[in-house]
Length: 206
Image 1 (cartoon, rainbow, N blue to C red):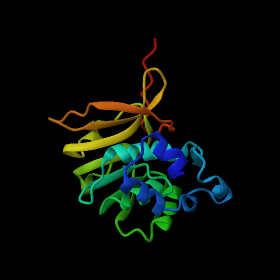
Image 2: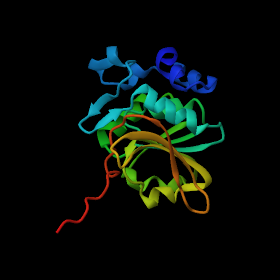
Image 3: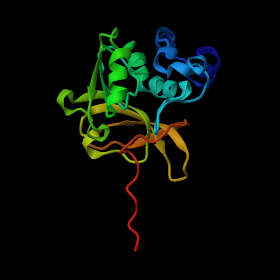
Image 4: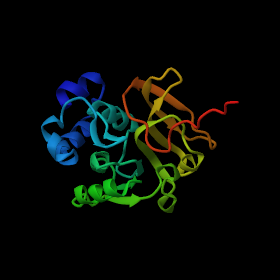
């Protein structure tokens, strides 16, 4: 996975490669799909939720430039794979999940990862209790970013997400909060399912 999927597509940081090498992806997929854990494709967790394809997550983590002293919020951690990866790079990770079954699964999967705290609540509201964060990583795609989530990012902090553009194409994007604003700059195409509560509100029709 690292040599054939991540490195040829720009995920080249030795620290990021080591993080992916250290975490067994098969431990975070459904039991019946463990033989498919390392294919370059998303893995379904339950209806409407998935584990990102390795390259999609790899691009987000590579461009996040995570440091040990970063305080990280992961939004939509699912079964906990992204949190396990990020915990190899940061000493403080809050993994937020809205689905009770997935949150319980993430707690079990991450029991040995001391740097990670799994919390349960609405994804779009973030986790204000531990804010501000120097990094927010959204483990999935978004069409819109809630203001409440942006407010939990420290000045100069980074946010990484897969953003669905007006053309319908999903792209990994990075934003740095400055003067309260968070412009997102896409840097690579990356597939991902839109997380609950991160879709665009339907336009008003007469």
